[in-house]
Image (cartoon, rainbow, N blue to C red; front, side, top):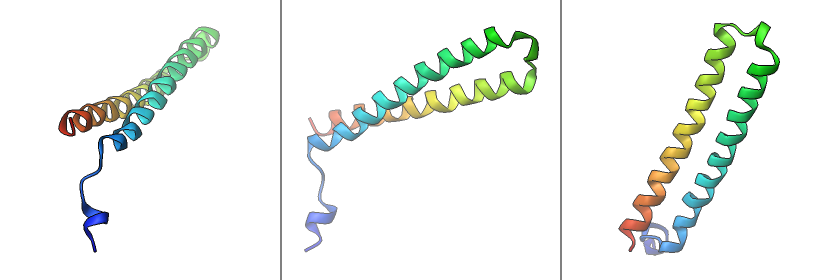
Length: 80
């Protein structure tokens, strides 16, 4: 009865991690470009708080991208 709920998934379920990896990569590029554009256009208003917020945002998105890429790699290798 519970075998359908707790049995291993097939290799097709790894696509979830591939899609989330692509989404986070696109977000990473968009945020990187917007942070660069903001820094160039508002050079006079930059302070430590603005710079650190931008760096932390980039780090969080990169970490989400990396974790999903790692999970996708683990998923495809383990179900090969």
